[in-house]
Image 1 (cartoon, rainbow, N blue to C red):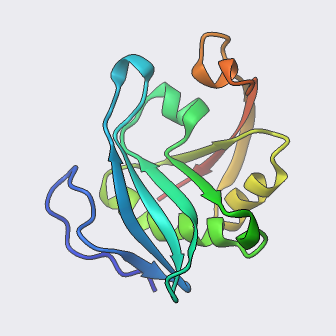
Image 2: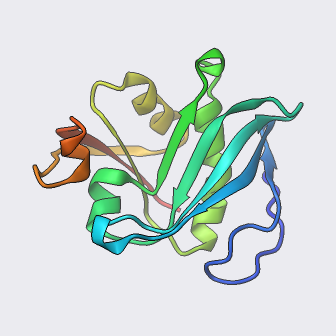
Length: 157
């Protein structure tokens, strides 16, 4: 069961931890929006085991834009190598979905590179529906980093 403590307002970050499925998501950083770079306000969480071991991180990007829906996604995650293969990312995504819904994000999109089979499986395990693979425009920051295509997964909240 996911526990979400009471919120303070429409863009206020969670005041406590998100707890469930053997994980704890603890807010560690708030990234400001940078509109000229198409970056949305984002909340970054440390993913911890219920015993307090750091397993990775996950971010929820707030807002709705073409950049989020097609290239960046509303959620991004990274799991430390020693903890991969244990469905940590999928379980963390599922913990964030009620918070995203409470913030008015619906549908929620997660994107990944087509060759990233682990991330694609994460999206499926977390309940996402594969929609398509899109080409990233050459002027996009992801393209400049070498990401020329993105898979898009839709989560209806």
